[in-house]
Image (tube, rainbow, N blue to C red; front, side):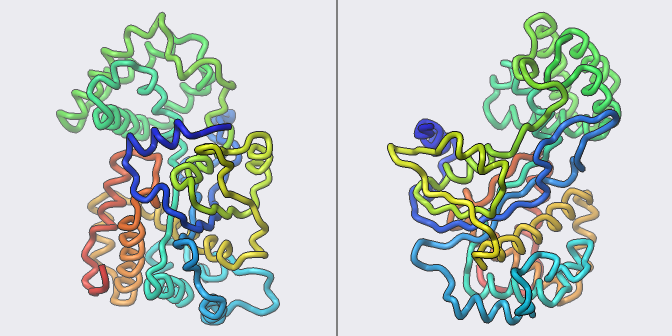
Length: 375
């Protein structure tokens, strides 16, 4: 399939720098539910466990030397009898982000990225957010104020649906969301729910009222994105995230860890841009130490995103202010690696999540860890 129009759309809409530059990008993934759907009482997978696809990135022709990689593997104390290094080998039992930053092998890996100015890239998806914002995207009125206004409506709706998640999950199950047949009944329930809310800010009050007034007229017109789908299947697969990774850097070489179900979908339809097939392949991670190091990368990102998701802004600031020196140093180095990666191209970070969550990411990226370092 020719994706040239989509590539041009990404460029025009987002202005991603260096889309046509030649990189070599290595990938692994984590929190892959394969299919995200509703069960009898809830979801089939923890909705707070964000799907992540990402890893290490290099300019073409500037990959790490074999000696550098082998030295790192020795520093990580990888057994010669082990087929490959996995995140669990450097996690060393850490269950949260702060304790992870105290683990010697994690520190050595981040130090290696930091010292060599290597890039990391990642795509994350909040599956619950992704599943509910089709309500907003079904409303023509959500586009009247532009992209940022639409994002604000989604952020507010998600905030309060997240608060009343148990109720909304039952509503989704009852109406076979996202394949609603009784749109009037669903919309009436949403309107009644909005009217029961006590907003915590004037902007929230305005956004909720805007959604309520907009959605009223869809009782008979139907919410277009919430019909002609499969009952209770919220995400059929995560191929679109792989597509987006390839299309954002369409001149680059993309090397993915094996993911058999995704590979089958790519075999059915190739990705072509500007008249040529994009350069991507799936390999067994045992055959590439850089894919293995991408597993370490997404493992760290998984624990990091879970940390941001779990705590409020106030709690995050309190936790970050009470780090010991080693934790500050390691977090500061990781922060610099992330900043340098986004300085090369902000396309190295892509997220499907709320504005509130993005602000938490920014809090981390801008936090003063007080340990100095290169910028």
